[in-house]
Image 1 (tube, rainbow, N blue to C red):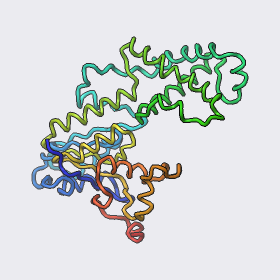
Image 2 (tube, rainbow, N blue to C red):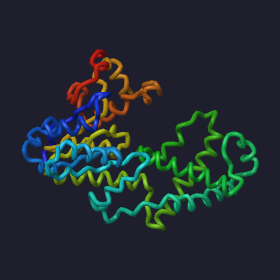
Image 3 (cartoon, one colour):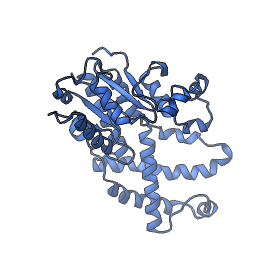
Image 4 (cartoon, one colour):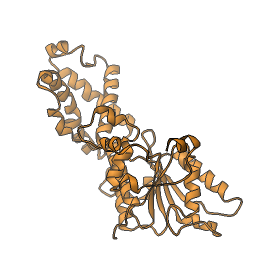
Length: 320
């Protein structure tokens, strides 16, 4: 398939996001040539990705209301999943590759990590434990080991969601902190050395890595065989790299579109460009537009090429 020019929209803050999205889609303003018109059954041709199951339920209700009593088959609305939700829809949206081991259960992972943490503690020399007693958590009991194992599992998920390189951790710390950091690196050997072997024996994968691989599989499926009807991703900022790749693919489908939540088109150019600078201050990463800046870069579209859907509130209109 030859990639189309990316089609990206934004709904301004203050506008009812899901209602605006539904009205724009039905009016043919999201995917050119697709409008409800006199045929409410056309809704069935559309696939819409939203961030959460709650948003999916709400959007279904909005479409049903806009049908105004006419018979209609609702579009396929799928939750991308967020930090607090599983992406269970991938189990039915695209069959996982045969080589993809199923994700390990959270409780099973915790129970397997805990004895590894306890074994690390037993290997720690007494003088090192005393030296760093105030700086690191050295589990003295099973309960403390479980808490540390839970933190380790959370770190594992964060690193794998961001697709960071565990092997690059060794050079992150200044020389004067090297002794403390060496203890930390030794602790992380649980993840970088022991844990992959444990997963291999169980034929399981880490949940975050499994989810990213399934998202990539869905991305490949859409690119290989684009659906005939509209495919829209709405409301996501693509904070997870695999999700950003999916959104970039959807934006370039012949009938695809990405609808962003609240892109600031009034932010001055200098401030906008600063969000993408590699040596920007750490505070930039907490800027509300940072994620959208990064996503537009991943899609390959300039902010000025994003079309705004819906009406601004009076307050936003005055600001512009």
